[in-house]
Each structure stands twice: as structure tokens, then as C-alpha cells.
Image (cartoon, rainbow, N blue to C red; front, top):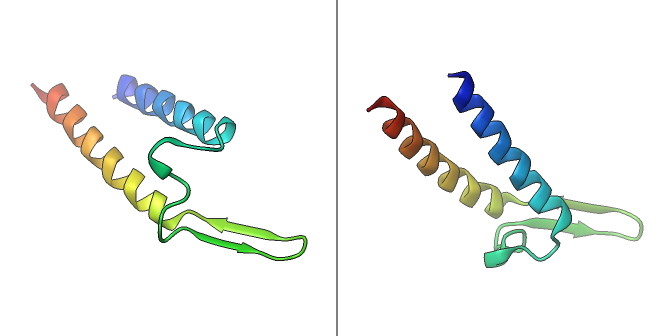
Length: 72
């Protein structure tokens, strides 16, 4: 179980670094319909709702596949 958590941590670290250092992400992530962005004079609020849903579905499928492979 510790190896799985380590692997998940490494994947999340890599995803976090990609999101931090690359403004233009592949496949339009971060600019999807449903992403909320409010810009005022000196205030910006950004909530990537559409991107969060897509990433959640993809990570759920990957983790389901990973756990099913580890059980065998």
C-alpha cells in the first residue's frame, strides 16, 4: 500500500509542476467551458471547474486500472 501512495504522490507532484510551469497546457486544460474566471481591477479569481471534472474522471479511471492490475 505504501508503494501505491508513493506512486500517487509522484504523479500528483508531476501534474502540479506541469500546471505551475506551463501556461498553455495540452488539450486546452485550464481553458475549458465551465472554468470560472473573474477579473477585476486588481483581483483575479480562477476556479477550474471543467478541468477539475475532466482530471477527476481520468485519474479515477487510471487508479481503477492500477488497482485492478495490482490485485492480480
